[in-house]
Amino acid sequence: MPRQGEIEYLKSIGPDRARHALGKPFSDAACGAYLTEVGAFISLLPPPPRRLLDLGCGTGWTSVFFAKMGYHVTGIDLAPDMIAAAEVNKRQHGLDNLSFLVGDFEDLNYENEFDCVTIYDALHHSENELSVLQGAYRALKPGGCCVTSEPGRGHVKNPITKNAVAEHNVTERDMPPATIIAAGRAAGFASFKVYPRPVDIRRNRLRLLKWLIESIVAPNRNGYVVLTK
Image 1 (cartoon, rainbow, N blue to C red):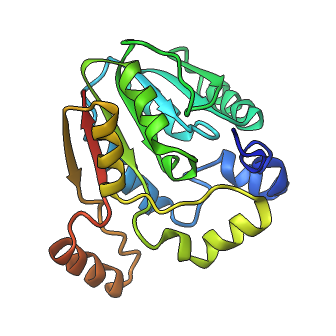
Image 2: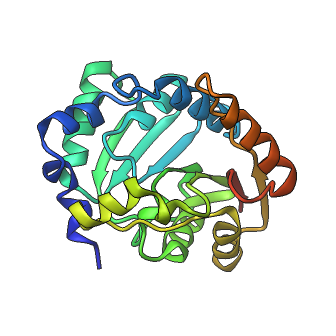
């Protein structure tokens, strides 16, 4: 069953943080890192124009990016407040190739309708990643792909993550590529590939060093996963 914490999240964080969520990525101090990441993420998608299903879209900022590139986008989120904010984003950008729906990405009803499915920083909020990927698999046309970007191992130990769970009763889980690939295989996907995330240096050489070490020692610890039907 859906978690009430996810449904009420936008209200529970207060008006200032809700405005911040609506303005992402440009409202965030890490805007540069967001833009680098979403740029790399988009490079893994088949070129537009294609039908794209954006799962767990939140306030719709990723959906707006995809629509501006020429994809025909459907964004889905569990929380009505998130979808209301996403509709504001849509109107502000004047996009007619973008639609939003309130829905549970663990209970999708699409069949062979989309060329690609995107899950950007949302699968780790699910209670059952297999249900999400089964729905994504059914939603895709033959040969379509599902691209994910998720926090890897250690996410649940992060103090910010712990605080979110304690304050807002949201679901937070580690979601490394191995977990996604295992669920994708069980859902029926035919092939799987992991791509490294771009380095987040933000003027910090230690971040760069950590990225270099992890890319050599544990290349599949974190990264984008592309599942192909």
